[in-house]
Image 1 (cartoon, rainbow, N blue to C red):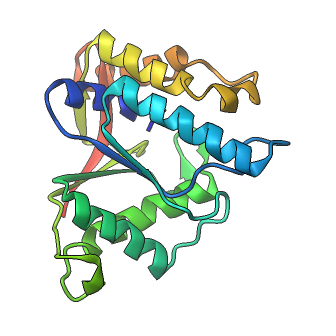
Image 2: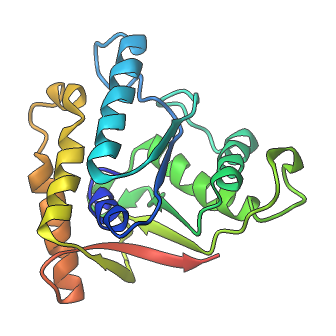
Amino acid sequence: MEYGASAAVAKWAEDGVEVAYLLLTHGEHGIAGGDPQQVRETRSQEQRRACDIVGAGELEMLDFTDGLLEHTLELRQAIAAKIREFRPTVVLTQDWSVIVPWGVNQADHRVAGLAAVDAARDAGNEFLYPEAGPRHQTNTLLVHGAASPNVAVEVEQRHVDKGAASLDAHEAYFAALPDHPSGDEIVGQAAKDGGEALGVPLAIVFASFPL
């Protein structure tokens, strides 16, 4: 979320939209040489700070193993259950393609994106996972990082600044990646590129699909 989409979250939260984040792992295997339990705790804390900066309220992190996500019925059910619990009008996920605009997509990211698509539909089918609560059909799927976006959220510089700060909140993660660009560079460029596509100064783009 922090790689651009969180700037749109800052805009939505400012407008009174309730936003919740669902992460499938705690990122415990994301820092080379780190103790997984300590990394899990640190990254969870940093994610909470990242959410607070942009105004995302609820944050839940599931206990699937970082780096080893598989597209299983168990994963789909877990996501669908949370969709039925929160009952969103929009589900936002990331592109699940192998090749994405910035290079080769990471394995967990591909699985998470595709599982979110399937779970958003599963949640609306009362015959699937009845033990997970009453069905709920989300209206719209938004995909961040898609090669062919078709909608955009116009944002202001203050939203971009919050999005950049939310990315920079992952301090321990980026301390292990000294050559990683800053939040200003990544989120700022994403917003400028989106603005050019929309014909406005700044925007965050998504691919939108009706569900």
